[in-house]
Length: 315
Image 1 (cartoon, rainbow, N blue to C red):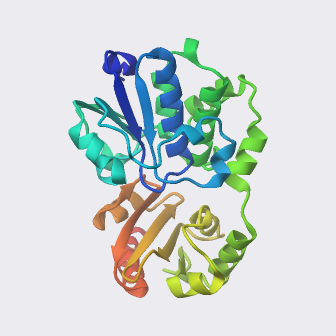
Image 2 (image 1 turned 30 degrees about the vertical axis):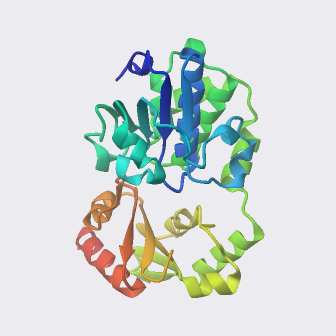
Image 3 (image 1 turned 90 degrees about the vertical axis):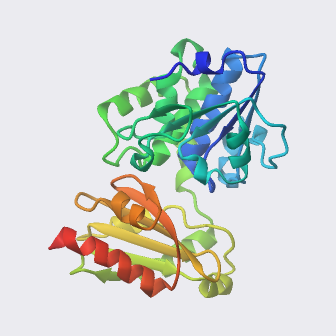
């Protein structure tokens, strides 16, 4: 455990960043930390640097204060949340040039941390849970509670992943006391999909394939199909989780093409396969049950190599 207020005390400028392509936990944890530090260190200028985020998060108070242009002067202290410095994109220069760096994370692939000061707990449900641990609850308010709740909910699959502990649920119960509309929050930021997203999901599921005697399921979306369907960006949130719950399967693999030579791969498992180790083989990382990586090559080549790494788990 670290004393985040003491670590940041005296700094006039503090920068915070999560990973590229921010998800609900990344957004919730960085927002909650910034709101808390603003209360505790009112003289400091605190900036959250972020990639553009989905409009579904517009309902969360404080999101529009994020800096999406990376046009600020160098902060004295830079805090990386929910990732390592290698996955913060345009914010990496701020991290490299900061007088002090802090890393708050829960990924086992980053167990040692990447900063001068590290708070990494791989057993935690989410980075947002770790932010809660760092907060003096005397300063907790509705907006901070909502941000932390959202982050925990997203990274636990709405409290159903194995990383959801009794401690996680006690934290969630405490947060709910602050009276935000959590059903609407989850509907808007987690469950709601556009018509095009539903069409894409339907296409992926209808073309999915089973492997290794039905223990592994894979889905794929290439640029050609995305262009035909009018898909831009990454509307695939939740696809790999939908594949994962296919009856009889242990693992799910979802791949989508981001340019002519590169695929983004997401992996999920239920009880047997350590997908973090599979992802690390390709230079990626994550958790035992949820991980990912990028790969330059053909889709079938990628799939064959992943399956070869998973096969020993079923022998």
